[in-house]
Image 1 (cartoon, rainbow, N blue to C red):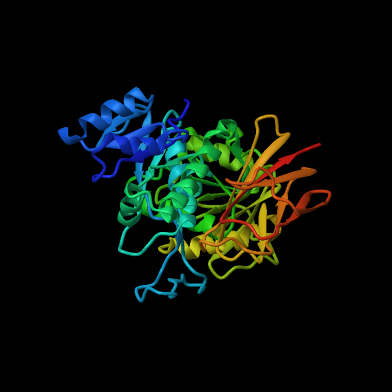
Image 2: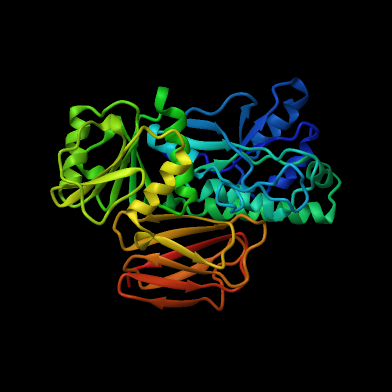
Length: 411
């Protein structure tokens, strides 16, 4: 379906419909407005301007609303410059990409809105809002634009710094709204994660999506109910970590993928594996078995920590098959999607530290030969150096904003 492209939560203090002047020329086409009668004039004027209105607490037909996190580098309890880190010591990044992709896989007929309002008393920089918009839009969703109290007050008073922040928000909204064709692109992935993502598997499988992506591994969400042979096209590995064995049909498709040369990473619940252990591929938590032209890496015990499972999976697949690799990028994320004709692709680059790097480089696997880099306020970034290799390209960026789109073409 065609997504309702840019929703916004209307601030509770804006009861004068003149505030709708801020939307003129912007790509915001849905407003979520409080039900009380004090907003009747706002609702009427918005509809007269061609903006859709939906009551707070509800969503339009064909939209799935997910509760997300404010994206970016997570701050520690001490605040200030103290960052929260994971077990590796790397700053922890909150992102909504995995939730958007899971929702799209489970409900492909629905658009995805992300409800992740700014919280706390801190002042949110314009780049924070850019990150919030890009973090959802890059993965095919839309952030429900929600403004912090200071920005709401500043815009009401038409303060210059608030208007500058609003300009960043509307520029980002317009950028993604004008690129609707990207919604037809399909993810490029090295790994498929098979699960029902529900019941006893819900917590583990969903966190696995989050952590595999955070480790830089590009994956495909594969709901068990829809698995077929074509589900594994282009993949190097499949992860099956559910608590119960797969159905006979799902097992058949996965084993066909393995026997043709793929890798299955799985758990004891999968069942007995008959192939002989592969010499030279010892692992402290897995036994790697031969299976046709491929391999099955089965855990010695049922995993209880999705972080360890995700880290092991990345090692078992090998970083040599990373689809996107950064240098000097800081806290990064990426989403790589390809046009149906496989002649074009877009790689969304996200830098979560609220300030883009000044000399980042990125390697992208694939046989693309040209790359155009752009940001929400720059149609094409100058001084981008591209090096083409047989099976990849390297892109060297100058100082950039927290979001960059790389558009790739075969010719």
